[in-house]
Image 1 (cartoon, rainbow, N blue to C red):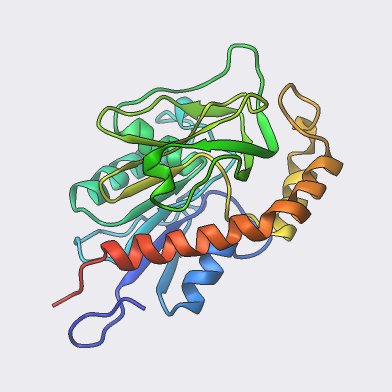
Image 2 (tube, one colour; image 1 turned 135 degrees about the vertical axis):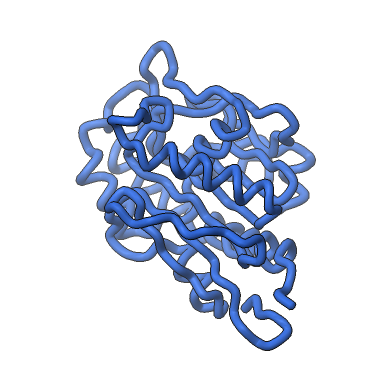
Length: 248
């Protein structure tokens, strides 16, 4: 729990981009830890909160949209979210972005987000190589992470690269940090019901170059998810409790 001097609990905003099967593992964990988690869904027309700089944190989650294709007439709410991200970073609010969220952070920082020229995408469990800065937050060489993306980012200027993918993943960059901002291209938050939802709603992508079969994804979840979730819970605890400044 992140509370101020008078005991009030500061909000932690989670920005969602699609109708997930259940609250994801990160949201469930933060609620269990006593955070005042407030879900905001701009894709449904909900208004982004006005930040004051004293929030416990912000999370920008994944979704089927492409920030590189957002315009005033196509998913315009994403453009508002870019301003929201810039505001959160300027105010030094602890910020975590996952998949689309990481791509939006990269875009807000001036980096490029794009498809691969060959159309390859990632969907399944893949090994990473951790940089020294990534090892400092618990990432490890050969750690298996869940990906589900057709676009990725170039490293923004001033950011520290935390992890890259090994050869079987078509998208090399996997995580970066910039001060109080953490960007993850991979998906540590996905629960078994959400993975099943992926396989149903996005099943058309299975079989594209770079993707794993449904059986491979299921086997990967059984083999690697527990370790990935343990890392995610720890990093969320450290990121938000470690960075958050108490209200006065």
